[in-house]
Length: 333
Ligand code: 1CP
Image 1 (tube, protein in one colour):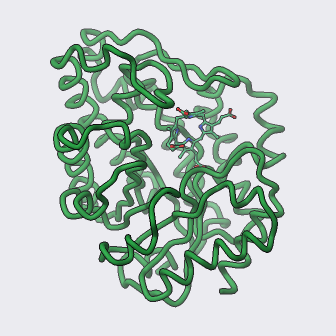
Image 2 (image 1 turned 60 degrees about the vertical axis):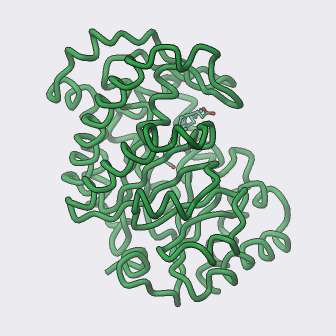
Image 3 (image 1 turned 180 degrees about the vertical axis):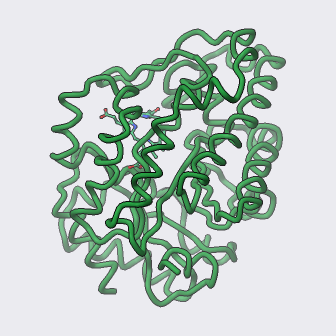
């Protein structure tokens, strides 16, 4: 059993596993080198050999406990034939959403369009660098994908004014997303993903009264589906207020917390394994402060099953030496 599995399944608390959201990415010079020559981000995600290589880059440098596959949550709208592109210094831009067209897509078309993602997972999970470690697959939560598909760009602080205008459309897309996300999870698992993380990056944008319809019910369906494949599932509902209600209803195996959450409060309220929390900006300070902040989380969760991670993705300006220091610090704790 890997360290992560011991933490999730046996609830061991002695050795904290560590992996980092966006561990393969722009803070690594070897990634930037590949990225410079591959300006089309979607194409890069669909290049099986390069996306496998990028996935493994952080494992060559650091003693991490998992590889997370280099892909993107927006590969699902792309697989549903919505145009997706990533503009430099702006973020994702999505094309018009045409329900009639989306309804015509079947499972075979979808899988064909993003097939290299599954092949990359297969190759990563068979690579020696992941021996004794886990390969993590992921999906965007239905709500967060709905946000990108309707808003057609990052909502940053707020959604477009008419976001909720077409209730029929919103609910149809949610149902379609649920179907294809299950397929996407199943194909990742069939190709070697041993854990699934569900990213709900925009969970914090919803009113409390809308949580059941847009988050609780559709996410619970994905969690139950993933568990039925005998695969643990980690949920990251960034920005929600009530973690204990979320855990009670959605029932993930692990809850990943963002950096605005009070870890002591979580320890009091949550019985399941916890992941993450530390502010990625801490990695931009100095080693002394990094040690203090990392040990804060390790101390708080010393008798609780805890997977070390950040409270959001590692920032592009991060010095890889700071990451190295952090991984060693967690391993030596
Ligand atoms: O080089 C570049 O400019 C691309 C930057 C980049 C990278 C490295 C994007 C564009 N996506 C990714 C990879 C990625 N995305 C991974 C790979 C695995 C790893 O963690 O190392 C994962 C898991 C994601 C997930 C993802 N994509 C999320 C959920 C997590 C989060 O950050 O909240 C979201 C919201 C996206 C959308 C996305 N992809 C990329 C950008 C710039 C964005 C938009 C973010 C926003 O709306 O502000």
